Image (cartoon, rainbow, N blue to C red; front, top):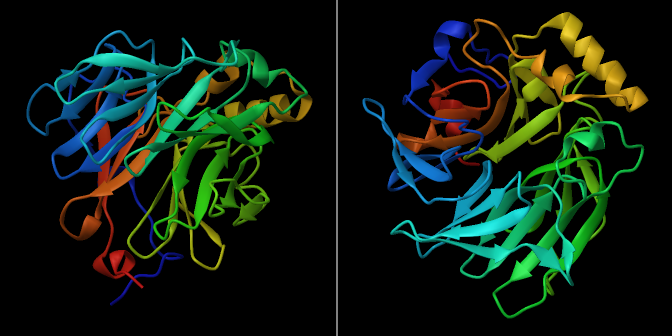
Length: 321
């Protein structure tokens, strides 16, 4: 009997730990060499199912969203120091970008490699650290396009409400972005010259009261999987734009408190931390990526665990269309 996205649900028992001894595995990436996660020891780490991770890179303050270029180098956002880094395959770490025309970047969040040269860099807010954005009435998140070392970085989207992960669609036609405080997923058409078209909402205007999304990924069928940090949850937006809750473990009082704080722009870091599940398998989930045979295994990163969470989806949900 086949399972539809609307019917697919996870229980706590379905979410299996993967890896151990990780430090703040906020972002997860899967490629032919294995499963990787950002690591508070200053870089990224290769995660192993049965032993401690191998850490690659040094000196990055709160490594956050990252991806990998075709040549094997990683591009990594340093959340606390507002810098974009590169980690070579041998671990050498260097700064790629820290300002535009002498102006600091702000709270960089996710570095999305797009081919051998281009990087789309999301910046949560021009504040550094980022937390004051929870109280700011202005929406000052933005996205940078970086086309190699010699080209001037360009701001290609601005006025976003706490920009989080950004990823290029599998067909290369759109750049998708998470607006965390907006509670939604958006996308921009990518024009031939590298500029972006008008912002479009993907799925519902809001993923739910107090549902603040953090990370996104695409499955083989083109559905968008979303981590909802405040509800310790995973949602999926299908190709028709309908959102389905796959798993949720919310602290109802804390979710309502952060919902009010976002509306009133009175939020604090404590509002977010209070949302963390006490005993559940997801604790402030932030990132998701698919791997394994037929890309049916999902790996979930978080800021509240020392391992990744993993689960499997049915074959019919992973079938390309």
